Image 1 (tube, rainbow, N blue to C red):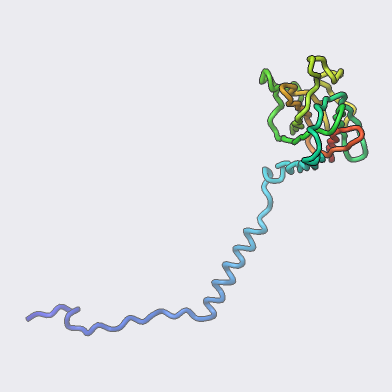
Image 2 (cartoon, helix red, strand yellow):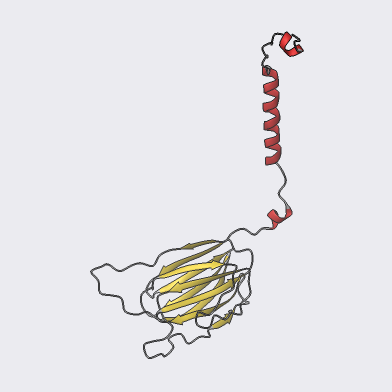
Length: 201
């Protein structure tokens, strides 16, 4: 009977290739070097040009105790602006207590709540202060006699503001800001009631 070379030769056990400690150390060092090189890659032009996010902080208005009667309606009476060292300030004056309020913002332009039309203010960021108040009394007469759209070239970063909503107890005032704003801080003050918005840069 004819035997094939494979049948005639006894099989030899395979030896596992050993990796020396020196080789393992070299591989680990190379991997660490590649990781460090990736971490030290220069920032791309697009990343460097990306603007820093604006920090928005909102201090809550003081709330009445449960035992106290419900607060009377409060109305917007004035909007004031001023330029200070390092920040622009917007102040919303009210006839009574500071209403509940919040703040929303981003790169999207402001819109009037009734018509949905875009508010003609330009800027890099847009912020809207939302309140449970009104700019008119129960008879429909305005409590805020000022214009509903104001441009503010005298301010450093705020380009203008507008009353964006005054409907069924919802009063919103929005404003636009140029690039370079670092923080928009909103807080209440009392006697008289007012909401203060500091636009810091």
